Image 1 (cartoon, helix red, strand yellow):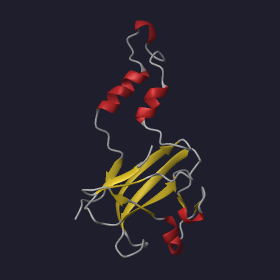
Image 2 (cartoon, helix red, strand yellow; image 1 turned 120 degrees about the vertical axis):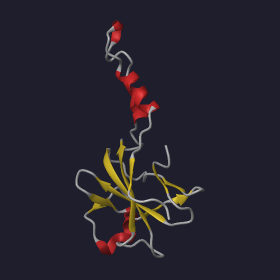
Image 3 (tube, helix red, strand yellow; image 1 turned 90 degrees about the vertical axis):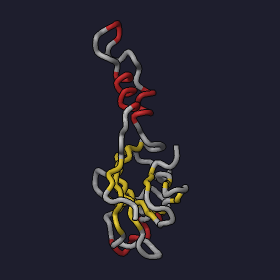
Image 4 (cartoon, one colour; image 1 turned 45 degrees about the vertical axis):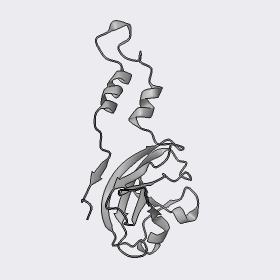
Length: 152
């Protein structure tokens, strides 16, 4: 899977993502080149930013870093870069969570394919299966990102 980190904003801007491990709120240090997380240090902000690409019409995306191989829950913050480089004072736009299995995002869709239909409700019971319940959720509208502000 690709483009797990995304957001919609005014086209032609510079957006950066920051990945935090939910268990301890440490930030991913992408400049290290490995699966390294550390306590946030303002002077290292250029080590943390992951630039998003405008795919057109203000739809920005970037892959979740493949070097993060630890299965865990991660928080992602997307900020609008105000100057030429990422900075501590950049404006926060979106936040969300990514549940990562070490190689790919865990989504309702991926869970649905791994759960057998007969786990619950087999043999004509009145309870629907977990898979059927997930199908219902998938068919609905689910928004994984909290929006702080609209485009300019």
